[in-house]
Image 1 (cartoon, helix red, strand yellow):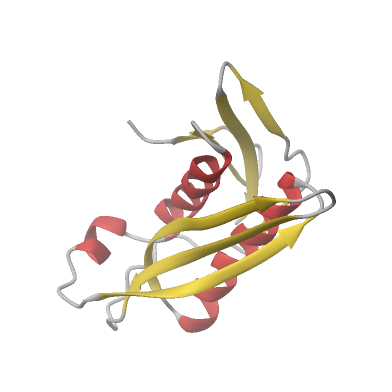
Image 2 (cartoon, helix red, strand yellow):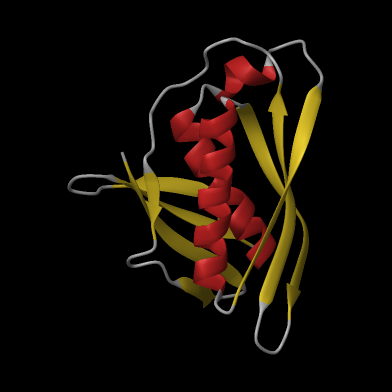
Length: 144
C-alpha cells in the first residue's frame, strides 16, 4: 500500500502522506511529490546505476522541516533535470530548539525525459503534522 494519497484541491494539487514514524511520513511526502512530477516506473527501468545527492535541512518546527525538505528536493530535480525516483531519511535529530534531517535523493543519470507534471513550489499553508494511533500524517499542497 502507498504511504500517500492524492486529495481534491480547487486550484493546485494536494496529498496526504502517512507513516509509522516521522521519517517514513517525510519519505512518503517526497514519494507523492516525485510520483506526480516524474514517470517513476520509467526511471526505475533505466539501466544506469542509481546515484544520490545528500539533502540536509533543519528547522524549529516539523512542518517547516518537511516544507524545506520538499522544496530542496524540488529544486534539485528542477535545476539539475534529475530523474529522481526516491528520497530516504538517513537521520532525524530532534533537539530542544531544532529538528535536523539528513537524507538522500536517489536518481538515475540518463537523458531520458521522464517529466509528467511541473510543480512550481510547495506551499506551507495548512501543513500540520498529526499523530493518531501511533501513525503520523501530513497534508501537503503544491503549486502546479
